[in-house]
Image (cartoon, rainbow, N blue to C red):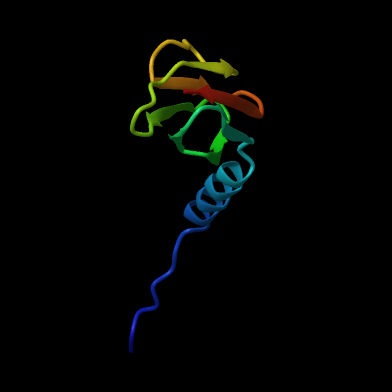
Length: 95
């Protein structure tokens, strides 16, 4: 006779709670837009969990230089910047 493998109900309850908590985490959107000049930004958009520190990068096209960030960015003088995702954010890149 084979023994049936049984998962204790406590483990099932823990798995359900972890899944529910993970699914209920607040997400915010980040949009990064080229507002002037020529270049690329990465990422251009995305959804991030509340509290995440999202990194963004500006890459100028040949013959252009990064100018500045505007909008919801931490520090605006470097082509690499960060955004604390605690609400929907919009960041503008100028080359």
